[in-house]
Length: 359
Image (cartoon, rainbow, N blue to C red; front, side, top):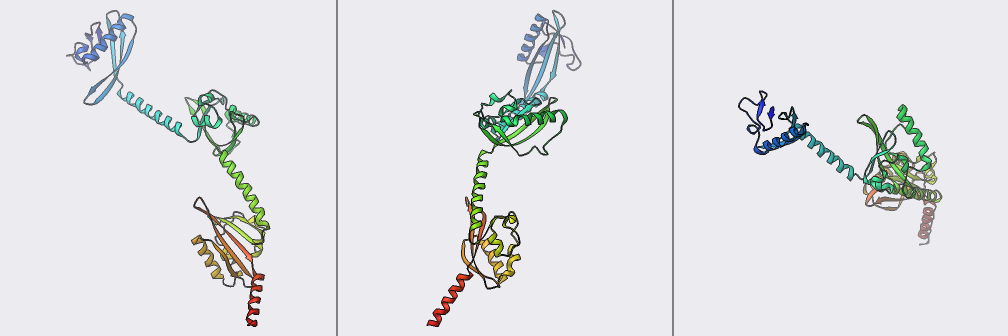
């Protein structure tokens, strides 16, 4: 539209029709007043003025962008376009960004992003807590700030090589265990997964990291406990076999291998599947089927059994204990303990016969 300083239309496109003579014929009073205000401003300053407004009809909102372009001191062009869809897209984008921010802020793991110079450009609150910093303290710092000194040269060399050549030293960037440096100076064991992408044509790297200090401490405790237990069962005068909930060997001693004629050192059995072990050893026993069925019964019931006698073909007698292992009420495996009680059994039988003869 070409209008004068009073909003009267001088020239128009066919879109508006010939009946329209002024802005007041097109717009409501409040919008017309807005147009006249901006029109006067454009004519006064002789500079283009842009503004937005919206209309409401039957609960449907429409958004428009208007530009007033001064032609001279008394006339101007008015250009108006519908920006409803653009506004809707903008709102949807805001909602999406807000959702992303909520997810970002509520993740239980740390999230950190660096640019192609290794500078931290984004991190969440969890990252700050892991390393002992306020979140904003890390922004703008080099990633090396949260690395131990001995690890920095290796990282710098690998990072430079990859950004220049694309050459990876690691086959995977998932669930890596790497050291971190706390603000107080102590080292933190971390599990990190990271990847790369491009934003606005620039390469960035993002990582998800987790403090695994507790897990490492538990692993060390378990390792220490396992070592002590291994040393114990190596010297115990009984055959010991510990299986996990999937019947894989966790611990075993040489005495067990000797008692069941297994031609291998006990350590070589660690991790092996024992699902068919009873069938493989049953021929050693006087009643093979009973030996197998009783083991299956014990595994099914998961109840402690003590001093069950198992007679072998050669006359030996083993006493068997079965102990299911529960941790926090969750079944995690079981322990088998076999003792050779043949001599004690023979003495018991001899005493019984002597008593019978005496009577």
